[in-house]
Amino acid sequence: MEWFSDPDYWLGRLVFQRALAAVYLFAFLTAALQFRALIGERGMLPVPAFVRRVPMRRAPSLFQLRYSDRLFALCAWAGALLSAALVAGAADHIPLAAAMAWWAALWVLYLSIVNVGQTWYGFGWESLLLETGFLAIFLGNDRTAPPVLVLWLLRWVLFRVEFGAGLIKLRGDECWRKLTCLDFHHETQPMPGPLSWFFHHLPKPLHRVEVAANHVTQLVLPVLLFTPQPVAGAAAGVIVLTQLWLVVSGNFAWLNWLTIVLALSAVDGSLFADPPALPAPPLWYEVVVIAVTTLIVGLSYRPARNLFSRRQQMNRSYDPLHLVNAYGAFGSVGRVRHEVVVEGTDEIVLHPGTVWQEYEFKGKPGDVRRIPRQFAPYHLRLDWLMWFAALSPAYAAPWFGPFVERLLDGDRDTLRLLRLNPFPHAPPAYVRARLYRYRYTTWRELRATGAWWHRTYVREFLRPTRLR
Image (cartoon, rainbow, N blue to C red; front, side, top):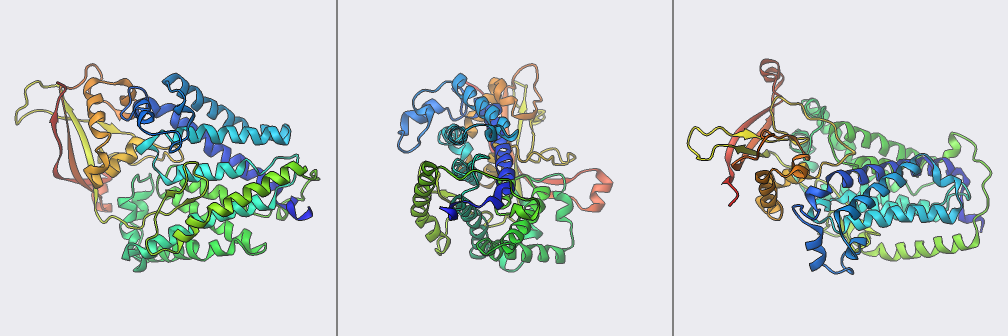
């Protein structure tokens, strides 16, 4: 079947696969380095307790069969090693079936992690990585030309990511329609980056242009992905540029990078180099790809209906394998930034003059003189959940108590998630949490004080607490 493959996309496939493997690498490293404190046997939300109450059919995972911290570490580090080898191009030097099995192993390993990760893994980019990673299994390697059907399915994913985000904005916060959301967004986004302060202080007319350009990028360009080349490739290129703009203005784990990866798959490689001679695909491969395409088209009904629903939902998975999902971001934008500041004291008896010392997190704002750091595509899960906790204590109900308990116990795995532990020799006697309002300083305030933030006490978040 001559229509089945298109050699012109060989370069786009090569770049896509290497870049996707790099995203997988960061995802597995994040899991390996953080899981013990978050979901380990002694973690805040332990996997063993989760699998006892949630059956395999609702959360398919290798860890439903058996769990131990050692096994989880083995899976996470194995995923990182396999990903690193794919970045180096190892899959192009083995038979087609073996390469497909390699990509399938990555997908199974990460699915197993996400499905027991609970709140810590409840982000849209987890499902996006799994959906993209599943399609990558069937994209082939240098033993065959890229299959057209899988390339179209990748564009369908990118369409839903961008178009879904655009629609949720127009249907959501009125500031998107008034073009004023970026007056607040750079200050109130979950985890600002080192340049976010400067983006916030751009002239307001430029913010209006940014929002208008965002609407065009998310509501017009995704449609052009399904047009002939070079229009589709040009639309993908503009999407890449807008995602890079988001990369330098904030920390959104691998969301922006994965969107860039998807856009690269729509670029016609013949514009840059002549395609090499590639073997015709074997019949079994064609049958598998057609069957998978039929499955994905069938599963796309609910996500497609969601796009055009007045009650559009963001970041929802419709099946436990995360094969076809709904996406979206920032349907509403906060006008005020609140931060939960966690403090401890080693004084046994509390009194009005008790000295409290702050725990410092790696990514979220704390010390007003410390400029935010760039961490994405690495994902600081605790820092992100602390942002949700500041929005409402209900978001923190399952894990914040166990987090405080581990601080009082001096748990080493939990303390490794933090930038600064003010009690390096012995755990504190009491821990408390207070809610502050944070805002960016002005240029004049920055020059006078050296502070990037100004904060004001709002209320108590957690009263002083100690271990019984």
